[in-house]
Image (cartoon, rainbow, N blue to C red; front, side, top):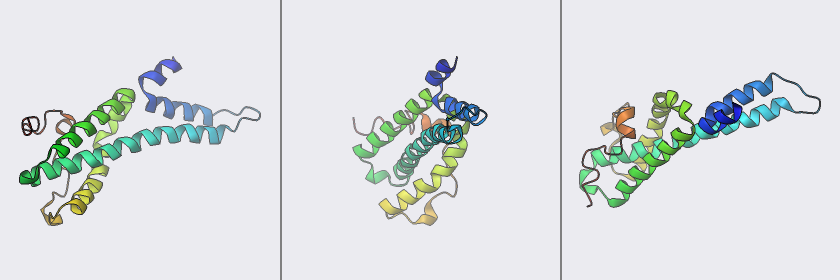
Length: 150
């Protein structure tokens, strides 16, 4: 069963295994630090997911706010970031339960990237993420994204 969870949901496996290791003591086994290392693997998965959302949301904001500056690179970045997110969620489906929180955390970084990369006045940017989880993950959102550079 443990091997099944390891393959089906890596993040959840790291959480459960680190908790189990913390509850046992074997002579010579540094269970506390070993559990912490396993737990850090799960945090790494979550951080990686957040980083992909940072870039994806930033590019979606630029796509909407700067329609005359659309580029093939933006289109490719949006697509590739979404695909990376989908792969992480396939390997660690329990992270889906945390997407709203991750997106909220990512939005601040996404806004910062937009401010650094463009001349957009920060006051023009929405205070909160204007996209739903479903829109952000939808490979066809925004509706014209696939048509722009055909």
